[in-house]
Length: 246
Image (tube, rainbow, N blue to C red; front, side):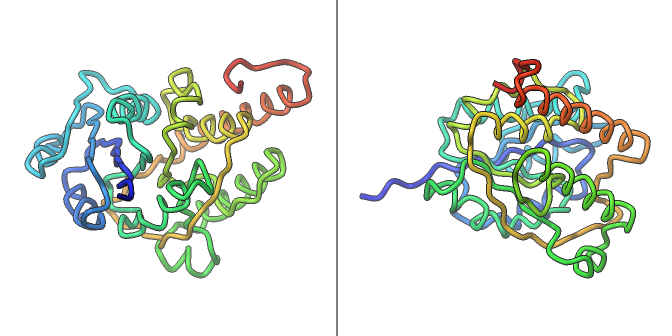
């Protein structure tokens, strides 16, 4: 009898009461074993709506930030002994109907980490509502990261990702930042450990209820990303070994 893969979806949630139900309704039926929501001390009824949907909910007593939220997500998901863990934002910005395409390459053993890429063409990204400044910053940062990290991904800034259990049990994500740079640290660390990374296209979907990092915090995120890329170069050249990256 063929083993049924165990897929856990985790949702790092913050003020998502208006969008979480729509996000959950798009997840393909029968694909996911459990959905875990971690409410990072929202100021709305996110946790209440999630509980009414029958989801497993954890609530932070204090706001830990985007990275801190994900740490709890993965910690709780690993207790379920999953084959794949999907990180899906509950703000309806990412198309949950694509989760089968995102998880299949991991289940088949072809990749350890899959990214849902919103960047296929400029016209498609802008037509989907991505602000032009964010599109061009995305292209610049992703191109720079490709050159430094030695990969060829179309996007490094997507918030739709899937991980194998082996990767989550290996990469020291608990040591990473509690802020938005967490995703970049995770990707850099996965590369230094030799994990394979793939991607699949997903539609661009921006609207008023979508979460946004903001320009001030976005600037901080970019500076921190460049800092960690610099650390990666020091690490790989042997000038200075970084514990975070192996």
